[in-house]
Length: 369
Image 1 (tube, rainbow, N blue to C red):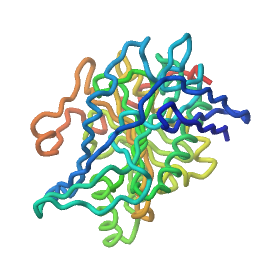
Image 2 (image 1 turned 45 degrees about the vertical axis):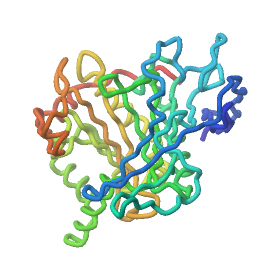
Image 3 (image 1 turned 180 degrees about the vertical axis):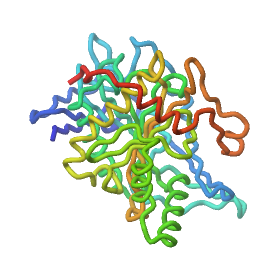
Image 4 (image 1 turned 90 degrees about the horizontal axis):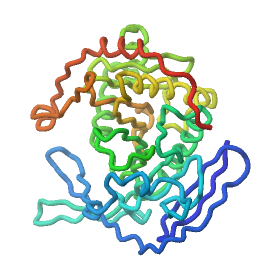
């Protein structure tokens, strides 16, 4: 276990340093002159799709593809003050300055009904930024196993803490990598969204899992992992505690789902042995995506965890890692069918994608400590 040091930025936002070792991390003061946070968000309900849509107009003013010299996620050094006051760091988590979700932590008030039809709610939830390297040019795939373990420690800590808030129903930890994905900050980092509702995707998955249990008297996710292991044609990598495979009905050209062999609802519930093995598994998968083409593939990696208050006995914590790139120099764009009807069509057969990913041998161990 590493150390955790919490402090406050100049505008009152929380910032937490995570470090390997037993010595507490120094927390230099934030010397910037920042106005108090003024983020407000609104949720509007779409009854036809049974989902909430988030509105955060203040995000129009967030940093967009800043030059390396102006990166707000680099450490503060050489007279340049950033979001992270320390001159160096291992892993840092802080409240997003331009959050999509911004609440007080208290249970939100009742929804407002407008004109008898339109349902809206005020600000709730929280958004955090996770910086897992102070090397601006680094990537997740170049981290050491010890650093990845520290990242996981931070994600578990934040999932647990955010899950205790009265205005949070689900916590999602994810990373967007690559300008093609829409990343506006190139510094290696991830994000944590603590939603004040259960997302539609998770709600639909839980409904399907419950339906499967009623019919088959078994857990869908446990049967899925066992069936993929028996088939074997879509397996990308397998260890003592984890199995990673391309889904039978993958939506993205190259998409891998990684499950612990013993089902758990969230990262915090992993056994010590599984958690110790997970950094090696993650570096293996990220390394394959980094070497899939002549240059690293842009990707989204997200930890799907059970909601805070429901479905925990049915759901299975797992990682989903996918790229929009379908071939060398070619991206899959979401055209009319995908964007308009959510009906995906893919050019890459899942078994072929798994075969290609198995062929890609990741480079040696990462370089960062």
